[in-house]
Image (cartoon, rainbow, N blue to C red; front, side):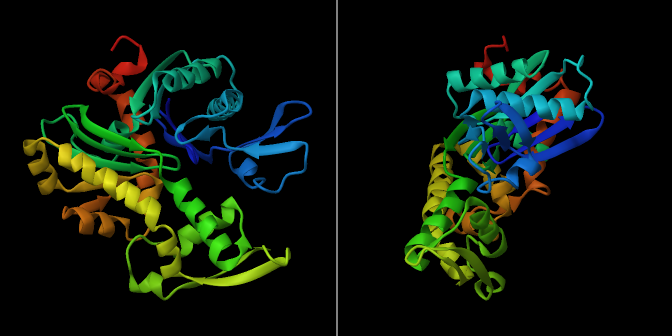
Length: 336
């Protein structure tokens, strides 16, 4: 079983079946009885809408486990669902994790998976899994550059011969883009909006680079007016949302530039030939590939299915275990 344990979404791949589960990484807990009421999509619908005795939250922040117990509950639920309630299954699990996490954070992921019923746990750095899932020739002695923009982290990596030559992980990604929209709406329009509304604005009229389609689009946003304290509707335009996201986007672009500056010349030549590959949910932001191409001068492609790249990569590793075992994270303490 391959798992992309993401800040925003968790995807599960089962060998021989493909992707069998794609759910938001959200758990709703009954505080009085300390039991999970809902997990995934059902729990996400409860965000910001729960009574006092129910808490709906994400157990992962910035790509790492923030609440161990809730992460374990979520993993148990997903594993049980995938195996249709059969309890005696102890799967071998490959989990994609950010390349910049600490040893303690890695251990937390391993422990949560074991507690959830895994027989063996292998960790793979997300950029490697994303590159394999996007169809890049990672086993060859050529340079490949991948940018994996998730919910909590952006991973920039140069890969060759099944390994990471250079990588940089910044804890600025999809969540920070949504937060910057929330702050902008509060500061400029005096409107308080929730996490889900900010995400919808980003999806519908958010962009990283000027496009005529987005720049002409408008959206009605409902929220709570700060001054009157009453519900209010405000009309916003594409360019102002792009402006509100400029700061986190510049952090991502700078990370890409820093990685390119440190890349060995032979690999840099390969990257100019092949271009840069964008993966992860953040790659779906309109105009992001154009922005990176403009800033670096290197052609940037968006993967065919950016959301599924990491989990498809973990699945390919599972199905070609012997040929690809060198890709496992050496720091996971598993003897590789």
